[in-house]
View 1 (cartoon, rainbow, N blue to C red):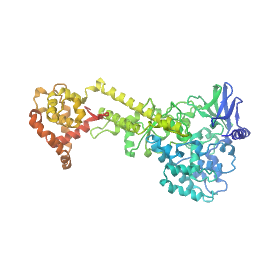
View 2: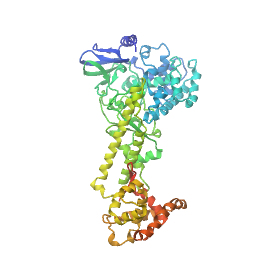
View 3: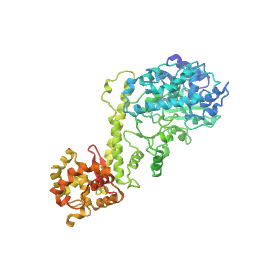
View 4: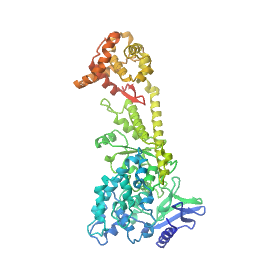
Length: 618
């Protein structure tokens, strides 16, 4: 912003009653405006209510000379701030009272949000959460724009191209990223009802707004959750998560920003816990080594499943957990430094001063949104996966489900991480190259840290002395059941456990072993130990589970056809070669089919090698 525009803004604000201490200067450095302290002292900025832009201003402005009831219109939209966004766009197109403030705001392309990036730059985001959700978020904003545009009364004075603007709603579905880039490059403030200007207003609110709840006592309507306002001058301060600041509203209607004992240099506000994804989307920048950085994991579930999860005791994230937490804090204190945790859960991201909802999480049916950080995997995310992998025999989360859930989550995060290609980031050029590099590498680092954390959790569980006796691995079976080991040499040519892995014979070995457990009573009684710790390692609980499954399962003819070749390739020859094992009891194709079903019910699959481990859940 030019010096003349800064001076015009400061002069206007002062004339209207704004106050700030002489030790504060506003200036532009390296293309970015900020506030600077010339001496170590307290810093304070006070602005009167009349220069604060609120929804009430929008309702009043649109109501003048119109028959529409704009107080109702503002409540009929899916986003409480939709009318305020239209108001900002219209005010920018005319000789507004707020012109000194609006004229200094960046243009749509100057914000550098990924919404407006070229197709080439967007391609680098492939595999990241932002890359996957960008178009979905944009579509949601388009729906929001379409909603408010069609609610505006017909007697309003619209721009000349108003009806041409409306065509975008029907055409945008056919736009590729390059088409969108060209469309957003056509910045015409006078054409205030076009979507380009609505997107501009949305990003201005997203990056600069404060919750209107802070000044609710001075407004003539009931302030709704997520209702936003703009604070000229105060919103010039840049962000520092470490900044300790105080926001308050005086009885005579002044909003005051205050920071105590500030050193010489730039004066910062604290926007709250904002990761690089939010900073990039709304503000157009990223922070290296951002302490608040996070990677989102979004899970879409049917409403019925969401209810079941909640009934099981899992504290699921809700919309209010990610927005305007400063509102809840402000009821207890006028300081934004308050650190109340939403829902008393350490697993939920505390986002302060975010007056605009996260675009991809409007309601539960849009998905459950969890945030990973470099040193924390939310407990409720792990619990959700553990609940989802329960099988028909589990009416609660068993030890098997706990381990299976951790592994399912590991696979999901690993898949997400593998999709982010950071190998070519050093070759990126252009104005967005630094942000792309910081964001993508940060996402990769967080996902890799989450994988390590889950791996440690799994290892701790597998080595836990309380649990260890309840696990059966194929390696232990091979080591302890010597007769079974010898039979594998005869049938499959297996000479060691490593050769089982190399030949990918794990599944065949498990099928044979489970059928052997079914027939445990057919062998010499002296060879069997109920605890499964002796030579043959055939625990009774496996036979009991096998019989339970058999009693409740009807094998379909199609399944017999599916297993027939595998059965004929293994069992008949084994019955001849090792009759003391495979020619005793029941070794039919039906038993093999049940063995495969049983393996899924009593095991979880671990790691890259897809190793199955049996778990006694009794």
